[in-house]
Image 1 (cartoon, rainbow, N blue to C red):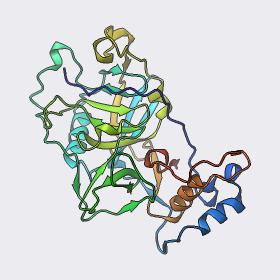
Image 2 (cartoon, rainbow, N blue to C red):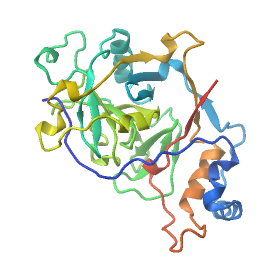
Image 3 (cartoon, rainbow, N blue to C red):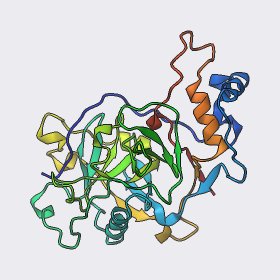
Image 4 (spheres, rainbow, N blue to C red):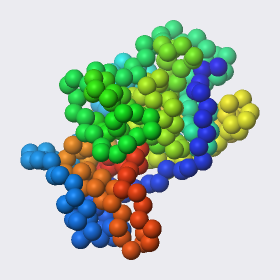
Amino acid sequence: MRGLVLGLSMLALAACSPQGDRTALDEAQFGPDEADQAMAEIEMPDFTGIPDWRLADPEDLLLIETRHGMITVELSDEFAPNHAARMRQAVRDGFFDGRDFYRVIDGFVAQGGRGEEADSVELPQYPVLAGEFYRPSAGIVFTPMIDDDLYAPVVGHVNGFPAAQTADGSETWLIHCPGTVAMARDNGPDTGDVEFYIVIGQGPRHLDRIMSVFGRVIDGMDHVQALTRGDPMANSGVIADPAQRDPILSMRIAADLPEAERPAYEIMRTDGQAFFDLKTARRNRTADFFFETPPAVIEACHIPARARRVN
């Protein structure tokens, strides 16, 4: 069986709405004065010349149409170029159209692609890929967080993706957070082909650095959460009756659609001031609502780079 080491979590992903200016501090929750005071306690980097948002490349936008709605995934060529290329190849071949999310485990992952049926075992057109679990840090812009992490010496973000680094900064990898998209595999490290999963629970960080993460959901996470669940105690969550599974109606690359029909997204830059302000506000929750002041710490998975759909 091609799958994942199962680790269950019952915490759900909380949705957040994108915002495009200083209101990223969420003044309704934190208050403008409290946010300014919190920011004054952290040394402000120089953000001169760095815009707050970037336009996503349509070649990197994977559109998954389900009966619940469209799921938009941004692919990462920086960390998994071969896996991102394989997804584009299989999408353009029409491989995923009509297949389904056949293993969906509440609090863990939704898995789809080649499936477990007998006719899905041999796929010579999609030979297995060498794992892309981490990469040298040279050539990437890693924005570290000041918060401690249980799973890595340093956590932060790269181009919108939650990431981690070794203590010496020589290697960087993408981490498992809600909405992370990665390739499933067998026990061998180099056994992934066209079977993917989307994290739907609290991030299973024990999978970091041993799975090839190639993307993250930037829109439609509510549609992922709406997928029919399997029983985690029966055949590792595989939904036995195909009629009960959620079909993949189609998968497309946005660049392949006519320009007037393709969706466009802006992603908050994780090396810019708006994201820095957002992290500062989340780290310092001093509004009256918090009669007990939480620790001044946040997790990389709890501060995703926001995305907004634009005309």
